[in-house]
Image (cartoon, rainbow, N blue to C red; front, side, top):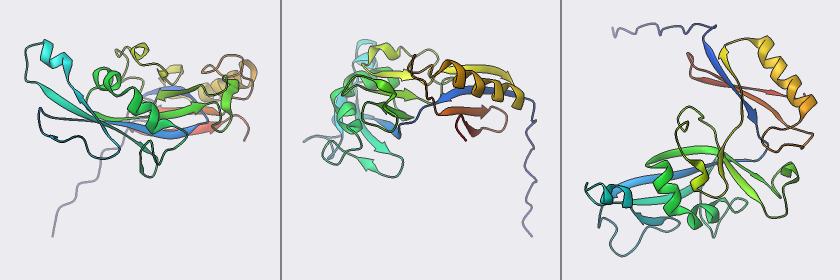
Length: 203
């Protein structure tokens, strides 16, 4: 018979990160790194090809990046888009590749015309990255419209503190869009469990 170990149980009262839950649409910037010249003839449909200038300037091997977009359930392109996110990724592909580097970069695409809209000016949309620890040292200002979800609290897990964060949003309004009175809620990331939970302001 095959031995199967019982998994370790994470401690409940370890650290949590509480961020504002933004009501937009789930999205992801995908950046893949390849040897230079891999995609002779152009990138695959729906992606942008970017030469890696940082590594070139540092004297390392020249690389190229493919930059694309996806929604929660599918790959998207500027021709088959989700509220203009793929078009935004294409338009800012060089800055996104330099700023984020290779990987899957998940976040919320939000703003004018998407769900609550947050009273942003007509046509203004933003992309807020979820994993605030991963991007703590990233200069998001290098890419127009790029940012992080607002961090409300970090510290030991506590349902009382989570409830206080929800109450603060109800009273103070959104931190992502200051002055907007109807924020959606909070996201709680439990670091020991590597698990995300959500709590709403209105329900």
